[in-house]
Length: 392
Image (tube, helix red, strand yellow):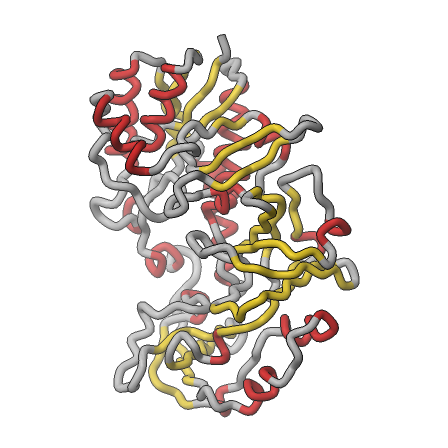
């Protein structure tokens, strides 16, 4: 009998994951990951870890499977929290959930499962795994298009993927809840958690203020009529101009108008609308750029502002990662594939180009909010084959 350790989070998805695996004849062990101690920045009633741990324990008791809590808070701080601080301080926007899967769930947690003699680890991700004829593993989008979570696993290796099971990847969310209800699982009606991986929803400004001090500065509104935007739109959307199309826009305060103050440029991210506190403008304002060196936030009105929409992005060679062993940068060169640059975004058509060893992505349609520090995930026929950290 194969042994599988399930990451029980206290939610309905991981509960049904454990239930299905036991029904399929696996020897199932439930394990709850404790990654967080600081409740001062966790928003009330949003996934407090003690309640989640209790729910996970109740599910283990219902299913009559062994259960234990593993404290990974030290590793979580070193690999995820410190990474977040460093990225925001540098003016980039990190994706801690992607790193949590690579560094915590499928590394530290996986190693703990191996010590228990596990053949596999299982999570409640809405995605699928297949084995190709050559013995390599593929990561496939989940059946539920509204819940597909393959993007969050875009940094997994073949070894990590080989030991992973995703039992609910073939199900719709409604089917998962139905199974939980019919099985009488305690978490059947529990609402989905939001926020950081296995932590919950946090107050980002409070979280960042633990290490990044508030620093008052200007929010400068950039007009959509800036000459550089018109010049950009005159560049042909073709491969030979891709480096120009991928180059980020830059601004100086004299190109716009100071509309309000902020408490630190490192607290903001491109495309952000909430938390700007800009009043008296005829249209909604969005962050179009930040400069942590001068502590300036640049805004623009409406999400179709030309400073918020570009044709291309760049990924440095060392920041490309291949989930699939069947592809390389050379095999992707000049290939038309699908890509997404954020979770829940519909797949976008693009062409990949290698220039001087780096990867450039040329989109079929302009993309809103290309954000340094986020991950671009590459798909072919619904299989996630690679990902890379967006440089600009």
